[in-house]
Length: 119
Length: 99
Length: 130
Image (cartoon, rainbow over all chains, first blue to last red; front, top):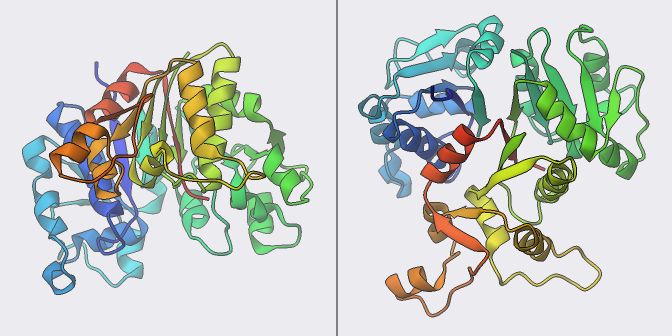
């Protein structure tokens, strides 16, 4: 059976290619039918912020890549509620359907996966 | 099914250590490398946080990084060399590196 | 045991040296490295162009000898490498660039190689940061 991978995304979409390159790991894994989950943590939650206008700084829209995740079979999407709260974001107004998790549930999420990559 | 967390950034300039502690569960280990060993500076705030961790979250530090910075190994930390580092990654089910 | 090792930081990052020492210890311990995967800024480790001062550690050279000596699979992510100007002869020709800076033992390939190695190995260990 294929090993499951949890990808923890901590980069804001505006901090260079890091966020996109982390997402590319998920999309590549999904294309190989591997069980992949994503956790948005720290500034990674900014990837889910609505009303982004990346064209204003000549960047491509990461939201489009994120919305492709389900098409690649990546449907287990989580976000740390603490990090949303700290940044004034609401779980009800994000660009993707993600499951908010309390801090106490994060260690268990990690330990449910065979592999973890934090970027 | 425990995780070994690997830190490399200074706790004084980066939030990875603080976030890591939020994800550290019972049985999970923490290995400090690079500038993350500055957390073992006696009397510092991160030193006190690490000292107060429950005993079921074992703490390790890479010996060469302690030596390079002139830090000694506190009694709540086990210093490891690279052979010990490899052994730790096998003792835990998975390693999570905070890049 | 079988290890997959992935690097994310540039050659001058302390974590890229630690990754090499770790990889050496893996082999010294009688274990196997199924693949080394270089992603993000770690693609610069595979460049043949960095010049180190004589009294400084030449990490790209140290990595190159390690991979060559042990006949390891050293894969550099092609998309990350192109973006950062790390090209082999074939890619330089494809994109009409005047020169290239990636040669054997390094190979350019896709992220599937990272997944394949992680699936095949008993442990995936990532190196990045400071």
